[in-house]
Length: 159
Image (spheres, rainbow, N blue to C red):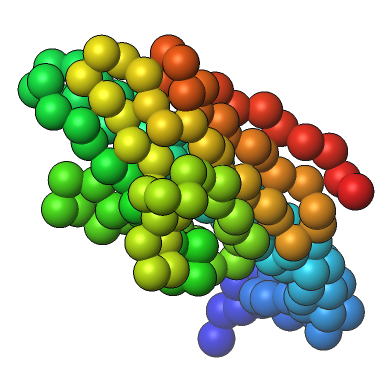
């Protein structure tokens, strides 16, 4: 019987697989990478939710102002900080529950649990604002100017 040169060499067993030490090192490196990547991806997800919530609030308020001016009728945006929702034109927008939410609005327009910001046909509004705050204390204050109905946002730093 003839033996192949590779089978006869002392390195033949080495060419067929990995040693236990090599496997342990590879698994350890993968574990370290996961230990770093999972918390970072969770923080990225939370940050993405926060930015999307700010965009939703600003867009909803701006759409209400635009609709009031174009339709000639007052438009209301009801903000329920307990349910983390915005209601405008029959549509309910839910915001992430991980954010703290506060609303400042004219008392005579407010409903049961919701603060109402009203936009008028001439472009003005009842005024007010919405604050969205993260768990770390940072957040944004979205303000609605009562005279011009302009919607602005201002970030505030950690407390």
